[in-house]
Length: 284
Image (cartoon, rainbow, N blue to C red; front, side, top):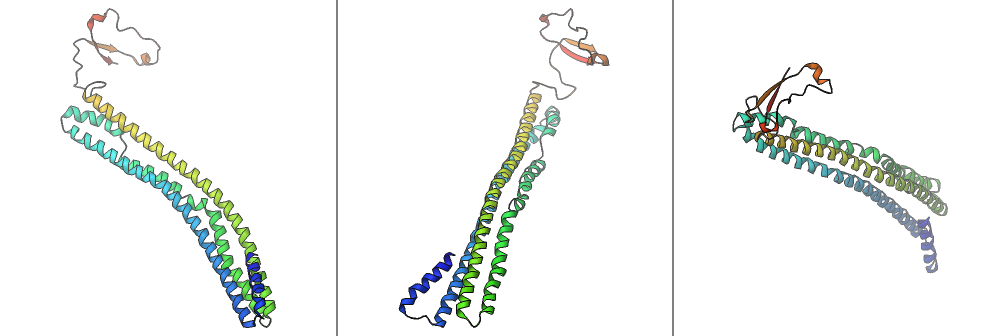
């Protein structure tokens, strides 16, 4: 409608300078058509840019997960570089490392899990943008086919009447503009929905990644602590040949039923605190 008004204003402004020849009017009309086509092309470029921006923003939000995967790989490599030499010290240290290092996730498994968090979200992007993309495709198809056909039909139907041809062109462009406005409203609605859905999906991907990262860090910390405790004999002995250094020993015989009873015979009857320490071994 705006373009039609501009065209009429152009005619009004030129009228005082004399009659407009058919040749000049044809030139003005062709310029008017070309200007509308340029506006349509610019509109398509703008919409396509909006779609690309959403895709780029979405990918950037997920790219940080890949960075976290790289950092976790460095962390696991550092732990491996620390534990590998310890195994070579003696059998005691080797046993300690072997006892607990198995709970440390491998670099491959951690990276696979984190990549899965990211790739799964990335795979949803096309679905998230499907309505917006389809609306854009419809507009592009309309410009390339329907709009061109409307103008072609005008030229065919009014080949001998410039006045009728001019009116037909104005109506055709008005029809195209009406479709454009309706399409743009739909596109804006779908894009708003897509952006919200994209934000939610990125958050889900990050929750997935955080769970994996937290689990890995926790497993590494626990394993390293247990290995250190084992080496310094603070919590557990690494082999059957270890000794607590206590000279008082006790062997406690247990039956299978004892593990199901709430109470058992007190093994400390007759002892006192002056012992200082006592090493107990269970026998069944």
